[in-house]
Length: 243
Image (cartoon, rainbow, N blue to C red; front, top):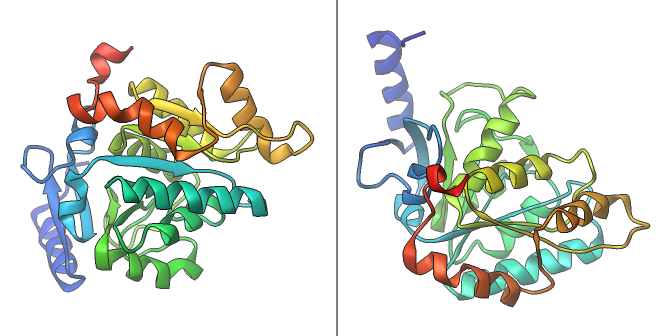
């Protein structure tokens, strides 16, 4: 349903109190990569530094129950991406997402939320969310006070991939939400990268499946940076031409 004028006024007041702002699809500050996807959000709520949304981004996602090796590699990837002036975007989840955000705090990272800007999930990451706002940004397409539901996370994932030139899956089980992000990235004409893992580790099954399906091997940041260099120069591929 269409929001009433009173609903809109309340939302604007809540946004002002939180020190956040709206960016509409037709405005100059709207992320250019996100604008290129099919059915981009007409309005996004942003808290933090809105200028980071105009820089090139790489999505880094993976298992919530990540291995020590997966977390170590994620930290290295995020550091190396940031050193090349890429913004790391992820979903603020436990495990790989959290490590990717923390490793790129000083240079700016973007966290996409499944709920409203005041509904950080998981709750233990409220402190991390505030740290992100110092040099990066929180992004949501949901209204304030919106508690994230199960079906909101795939919606969130399409924005994670849509903001980026490419998506890196570090670890993912076969039924992982990270594979949904990878599917969206592929549909949006983005590059999909996967870190190979042991066939004995169920956390690697999804990433290994992506590699069998044609995803690009990722064993270091160099694999990603070289593949994305042409896209960084030309900009995101419009989804209508990518399919």
